[in-house]
Amino acid sequence: QVQLVESGGGLVQAGGSLRLSCAASGSRLNIDAMGWYRQAPGKQRELVAAISSGGSTNYADSVKGRFTISRDNAKNTAYLQMNSLKPEDTAVYYCNVVRRIWGATTDYWGQGTQVTVSS
Image (cartoon, rainbow, N blue to C red; front, side):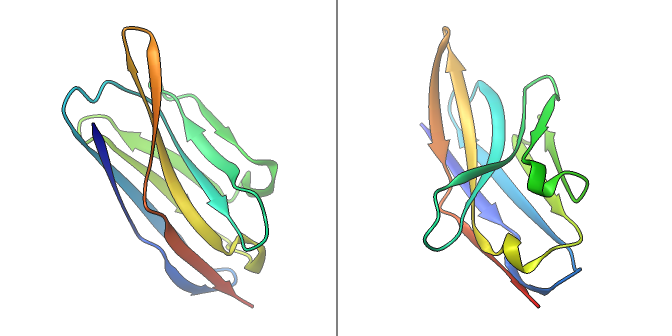
């Protein structure tokens, strides 16, 4: 089993920055990809950014150039640096971790952290 603990959300003015963290713990972690998703009220959950075990990254078009995802494999932790925040970035942000064991993958989700950007 994998447990995820998220931190770093909060209230910030437009143009400001926040850094989210997601720490994974448990036995046999074998973490493959790590990522961040978000869900705004009345909208579907969407991918914000993801990073593979090798460090390859993928971003939603809406955050390219403003957000940076990174990971510390020694700490089993993923980070999302969010700069130049906009009101439309307001959402609950969820950490996602993919564990791979013997070729089979399992998704784990964090509890979510609220990010609110005021105009």
